[in-house]
Length: 544
Image 1 (cartoon, rainbow, N blue to C red):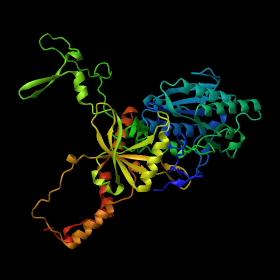
Image 2: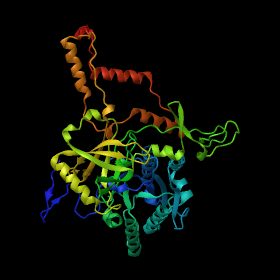
Image 3: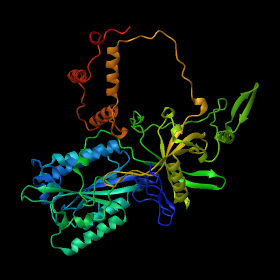
Image 4: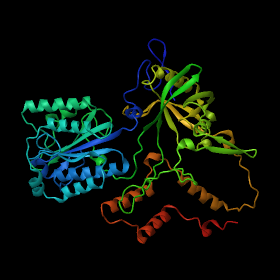
């Protein structure tokens, strides 16, 4: 925890990225997606010109023996990326666009084919890519053609149009271009200037352009970004799919094994933080790392295969009429009498006050007991857009909490008609890695606390406890120490989810479902026996 620094005018400056009078920090990953209901979208743009049919290698990667054409390398990478988004980012949008074709389809621009519209990818998208991979170079040329006169400016314009006409609001937009031609327009200055102008327009719409270059084997050479593509990707931010200021994409991100479901930081609620009578600031609540679960199964009709929806109706048993909600009353038996309540009165009984945070007191951080943890924490951040001056008040509270090493105990009502919860606002300062990139933003962690009647005293039971020898205790202590490993929850793979994904994917793509054989299970047991020596009676003696 870092204390506040002194500014030029003598005032204490907020920790981390807060600044007096500023709105929101630009490099804060939490605020990148503050809109509710917005999704990420990505367009894979593949070049179909003649250089893409030659043997090639991935630029920027370790030397490898070329065995596939540049087009097949691109299609394999796109197929893996689509499968990853289906599992890890199930609500994101993806599309595929082909250019340098002799025909056009799905757009008004020449030599461009929209192979897959911008939508949620599914089995159909993967099967279409498999059809392209199963086709030979002659078949692809006969179906789509092969030219080298498509303007890159038209490609960027077509991508921008697809993003504009997306079916939902988009929070993040990316264009991934796969090409083996480092100078598509040669000495045509007019086409180059037009492409750079459209790239500038894409940046104005917050569209990130990433280049995945491929190096041809014959003629041997390198992919020179400075000839053309550097002017297209210049100005890209440092966020995104492992893209730096050079604009080169990382092939490892596209072809990485699918092992974990992404848990992006998402906006939960916009509330107020009350300090007392007449003093409050606007804040936003964000979800952090949470448990990934298997998708809920959807019930389908046996005859029409449509989703079955449940509808609840109240029916009068005497008249067999459907009752309106206003005609239904609830009652509570008290002293042999029935007390009736209307639906509105029942809602009022559940209302404990307006949603928000109310500071009760401050306590030292040493009183935060990890034993009290019973659910995942949230993150609190100021909302300058909803109430001007919230950043200043929020930063002042954060400074004092970091200086005095205290936390704020609050009453928290997340939504109307929900019971209040006791939470602790734990201060958190900004942390950066060796490259200066922010890894932890400034703000408060919302740690949920139990109430007094939720705590129970542990009573020691008196019984004849078994005793063990000193050797057995030593062996058991060694095993317990080996169980303690340093890891992050984000990097721990869930084998249940991995097996579920593989099974569903195999059934959907009509592939063979991999099953673990008895030999594989015995091999795992043998490896565990080698890693974890057994504590048997011959070594440690029996337990009495």
